[in-house]
Amino acid sequence: MTLNGEERRFDPICGMWLAPEQVAATYIYIGHVYSFCSAECRELFARKPDVYVVRLAYDPEAYIADFCPGQRAGQGDRSEPSTG
View 1: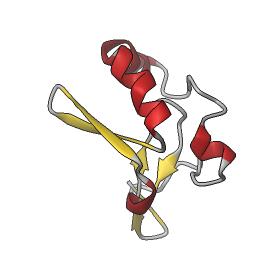
View 2: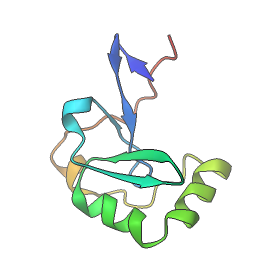
View 3: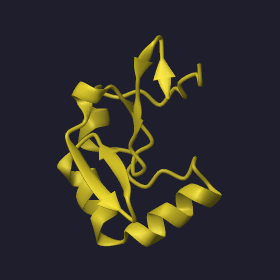
């Protein structure tokens, strides 16, 4: 996805859209690379990736960690980027 012409990645734990330089950690699950704002969000995902992937498929607005380190630092954005 892009926001103002900049590529963004989605953190499936806290729901933040991250610029590439804001990605603190990644996790590969079934061939897909998931990006995270912090090691804490990555660790939450890594404990039960199948649960989070299914949750994303059915309710992408159901964020798990509403007060993750990246949000406390004001680093991410929950605004959904444009597709263009």
